[in-house]
Length: 137
Image (cartoon, rainbow, N blue to C red):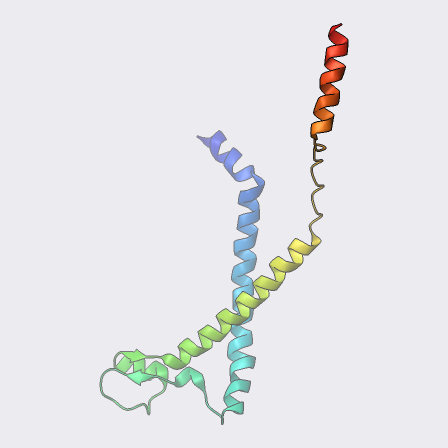
């Protein structure tokens, strides 16, 4: 069992996947910071100084005068401002991943095209039959 595990781990795909997961997690934190600290404050400023992170609908009947953290402690809330922030982060992350995949595909060397067999025409078949028949004689 130990040998099988060693073989499994030493395969390139597993190591590549592990590296991808680690880099993805770190990159996700960078995108979260980009969205929360740079993009959303700019969007909030453009639409009139709004702070999307504290927009919510209380489910316990209380008003929206509390900060989101306090409102969550007081009862259930629908934090649609937080959802907007996370959605913007997803769009940015998806776009960056798309660009990365596009770049990697452009850097890959195109595989050489397989040589195609020449087309055989009816004239070629007749000629081959004549050659065959003459060889039989």
